[in-house]
Image (cartoon, rainbow, N blue to C red):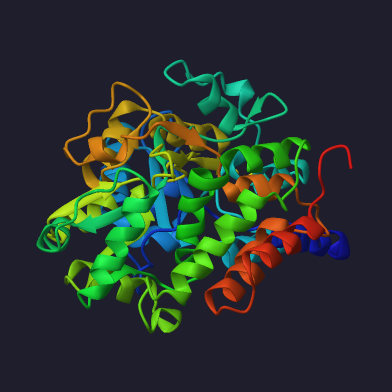
Length: 441
């Protein structure tokens, strides 16, 4: 039994990965907005008390990698939830990353609730197949506000397993309007203008795009932005089995990343730079731009920089962005939870406009539901694009097997080689093609 569980966990670890990791977590144990039910102590809350409703405690794991972004809004969400359900106490900790999740799976010690990524990767499906997540259909949750694609995010084989997404994630170029204007630049209309702007900044002694080469996900964001802009059709064909990853447009997309390295567009010492340092370089005016996710918008707004945003345009000026739903509010219930009925209440609250508006007001994401009202005018810039294209990580995940994780190969092998000029774009595409399991193969 232990061997079987270990094999399951190793399989899940091979499929690990998350879109859209924003800010690093803070040290120490956070106050996450949890509080005792009125008139009880922790001990009394677990035993019950006056009234007929059972008083329970739910353990919830938050996204450790995005703690800096999510800590304040989840304090408010959790406090509002406990005001509504005083018999349910939350122990909310920013304790989850790939490593802690895999350890919990191996030890069969998952919390009552933990965040998942729906159909963005195959990991939730693997956990469902191996009995780690509770099915939600029996609760008849009201999901009428959500679109069919949003519902599909949380479903495996037609059954619901998590709260649903209500925000859109993508990668854009955040730029310093003052530096651009001082150098006679504006947001580019096409790819050539984009590159000409980078050359102008470099000639002025300004790092064109600051990059966190030390951070596995953050150094990949240019790829996530270039891929739909430059090779959307080819990636779609590869996923459908009507094309291959060796398509010239895919090889050229990877070569462009290396060209940016070789041309100094990411600066001189980016390989040793972490995410915090890259953000500081941008916010302190030492870099003209940074490629980051829409989830980081509030961080740059709060910095006070004269901020602009644009998606990477292709040669024809078309702005095709990576499409992805935000997993900031998509949580599942462990199959081992002793309080699933109360845990469902938390998922229902996360699905509510009240909780979604708290996230919007605090973080500033692109909402996909019309009744969520952005308060930041800059959100409109984030939503200006011509087409929602593929997510390259999702494409490569779809072409993976438990024995050959193509997405992982891109993140851990291909991109490091490109950013150190150890591989060409053609070699990068060939390496992924060799590992891919195409439909009908």
